[in-house]
Image 1 (cartoon, rainbow, N blue to C red):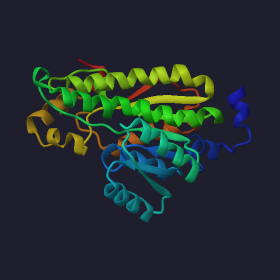
Image 2 (image 1 turned 180 degrees about the vertical axis):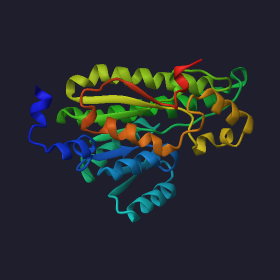
Image 3 (image 1 turned 180 degrees about the horizontal axis):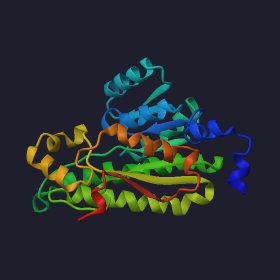
Image 4 (image 1 turned 30 degrees about the vertical axis):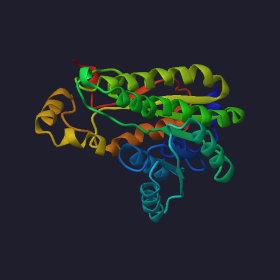
Length: 270
């Protein structure tokens, strides 16, 4: 009855076409948004009305991306900081809140990959993967949540992976970090749902991104992937936008602590 009452005065066509997926008036911080999945998600949220704050470590790359999105008519800002630096994250998030405005949506997208047999994997690369793929989710998530909690609302979307569920040779450390993202998402929900926050994750399958370019260019791997994936192909990053808009907007008002696999079906079969 509460849901029916909430939308009672909204015309049916407006309700169906826009209200559940309208991000107008919302502001989104997207980490690692200079290219690939982060850029696609940032632009996708902007297309649905959100104001975007782009993040990355390279000022030049972030500026280039921001200029390109602004040229399309989107409202966009830049926030250059290292998501693996706890103090820098807290300071820059506070600065965004003060100078740009409240962060309504956070997409924790920053990530990296190293491919190497586990027995040869160097300790420094292990530490770098942990800092980039999981510590950053905690650092940025915590900093943003501290501002969301007093407002009693907020959307946090962590980017997990099919490797949150599966394993493959030569990427065991990456698999470990993405499994941790999935469970940290659950933990964030357990702690913060009572404050009105919704924390979910998107787990992409195999998408054509700069991170995966070596695999895209490998005919043997691409053949394996298309045979292994029920959809029979690589994903295009634009196909992640719908999931992000759903989790960022009113349509997912009672979805919390979940991982949404966008993977062409690869996790459904052995």
